[in-house]
Length: 127
Image 1 (cartoon, rainbow, N blue to C red):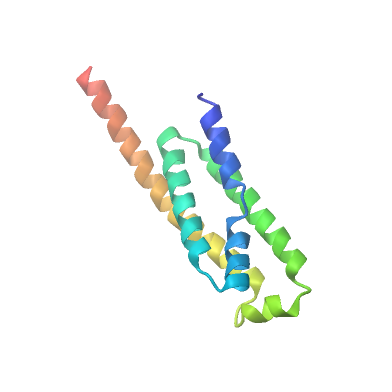
Image 2: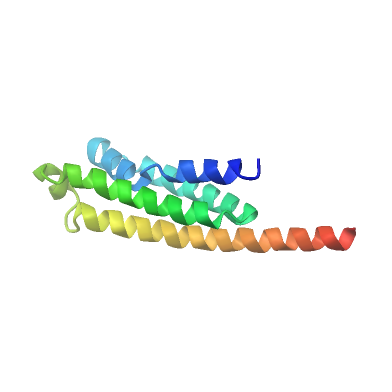
């Protein structure tokens, strides 16, 4: 179980959330996937902080960004795709959303690490 949870976190992180969000925005003019992306990554970063799954968080974000970037590159020949995201390009939007999500994740991860340390400290004192 000790190695299974970080692997599950990594696997869920590997989903290209940013690409799926902007694709849903493009197809249905729906912003709901941005909210889902934020909620999922916040929960994953909190869990990563509690169990110290640093590598899962880092590698998962890298894989997610890379796959989002790749799938976006496949859509670039479509002029409607690029026109929809003006004044920024879809590539810039992927980078900006990924950076914003990463900042949010680092904040939540830090809070989770502090909470986990406090819990461990209190458990040691009570023994």
